[in-house]
Length: 432
Image 1 (cartoon, helix red, strand yellow):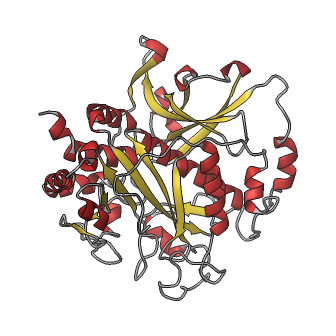
Image 2 (cartoon, rainbow, N blue to C red):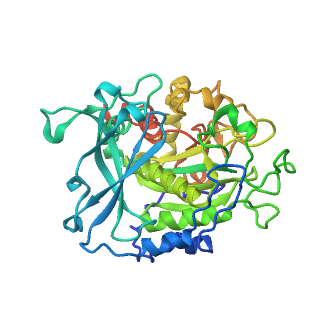
Image 3 (cartoon, rainbow, N blue to C red):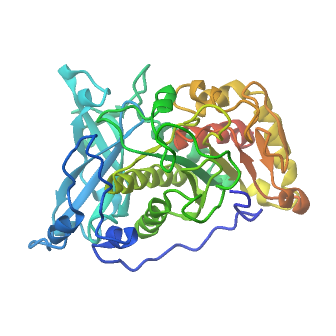
């Protein structure tokens, strides 16, 4: 993305959608949902989408609703399972949805001797895969406590090697800075890969052995240059995925504001926002869920690894555009410069929060090359894509607007990133 948001981050009107038919995804694919066949990799039998569609079109006789509960597992991966709700939940609010639970010992979040982890619904979206009236429910994870309302105890804590509930802490910070009306626009980059053996780890150095979508199986394509915002089958690989995902997001009410092909072949980007406060993290996680489900339908793999292919290839980031009521006000550029001074003194803290490995993943990406800054030093500049933070030229010209933090990795947790930026930049002004 090169020009993303107007400098004042004008908030768009709420989107309203007419529900498409149950065959939304198959139509977006431009076919009945055929999957590329690779008889060398299991599963060896291709399941025909056209057959599935016959059953997906069946109505529920009692008007029941299928609710897909989604949460974050122990490795910050998305997990889901489905619950049937009676028709009385039509017209419900998210706080009315039932609390559920899952086996935390199977996700690396609880011991087998005390394995229940509770799911608290926090946001819900129309389901583009099943169609109306079915929903997808984003959940926070909690420890059980039989003596508390709903049986909910404390938010599930993170511990070494196990991801917990990071949303709960982010909510506290967003509530504290709510008077400053923080808006976020996040640019999510991702890379498509061919399928591999079941259970393959599509992250880190193991990706060097895998094949990005559109690449030769045992080699590399021509150097970067023709692929960014490209068209044509010789340059653009995976557009069907990007377009299907775009439609799914629109149907679900995700504030997706655009897509584009990226610098490395097989790599794409979409943008979510502007969103206010905690809504930004909710919408980004849900957009990732939808993307992974779309890729599952197509039989390919998406990775959010920040440096999927080593060498002279761009990495993948999650650039985070930020504004507040102070930066959007007349002479708001002064507030942005104040924020930059605060960030400069906390480079290490931010780097540790900007990927799920405490900065280890970003070491492969933030090298000072391929449109990145060095991981070692905080820098900022106008229109400088080699800086830690870029200030758009229109922000400088109009003396107000937003800034773009270019450091977050593509696999970052948006709850932690947006909360950290608010904690550093805005919370000191609120506490005065």
